[in-house]
Length: 365
Image 1: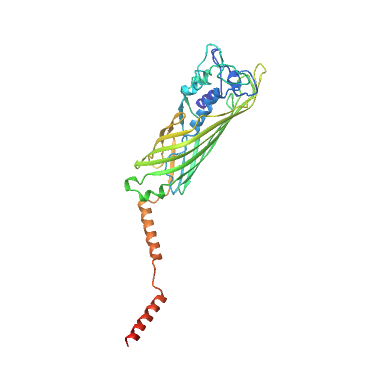
Image 2: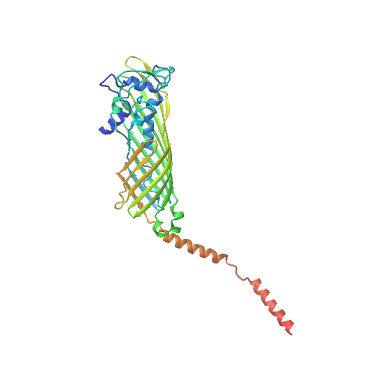
């Protein structure tokens, strides 16, 4: 719980500063204010937050390209780790720091940084606490049920108020459908473990934060989604290699009201979209014993992230037909249909044949 508290508190701008060069709590939060405060309204300053949130929330939806026909249940605590790099610490094509960036010795004016209604804005340093983070992650609990090749996934996390963190909730919903049963029986035996799935995932998270000595609350509403195609192949019975290609999005809306210790009112209204887009994934899942099902892998997109889905379990109730059994069943069905459609000689046909024979006999006489 202490580790979760530290990360979320860091994420939510616990901007205590040992040096005046680092961004203060006030300068970090007014980035969300669009009302015209000096140095406020900085979407680029906070955009890396939602880009990273989208990266980690859109991971770990799929643990296998194969969704069985039999009823199955899976659950666990999937974890995605996303390194914070220079892309997150600096504005694009400039050395101006974002909220994850470095501290600046002086505050300079910069015409390339839009903020509020001013044509020129100060370069604001990064936040000291967020700058110290090397990895980005998010706590998630997930469970799913599947039947007849369709899988429904639910994920969530709820935490009570902890110090400056006043509210935290996460809800996610996902769908997956696998198509392998439609073609596996027609493949060569060595390729019959090949499978293809389509999957969709949606996340919604709400966060409330009140800095020390402030009144009111900063509210952040986060949403993200991903649509992906997953191809899986099992070279061994207990290993599956998965390749996925998808498209992901993420957005963050701010709200609430904060009053600083100097009675300055801050009205967060900024909405920011992440730079997320196309995403390629490479993962390996393991089936160890009857239920242990860990998955590890990497995702390559706007950000590179790593799936460390170690605490994951799956249980299937029943046995699915093998591709050979499906092929045999289809062959029998085809032969039966051909037999039923084969033309048969009717009673009328026999009657015509008999009349023809009688006529021949009469002509012969």
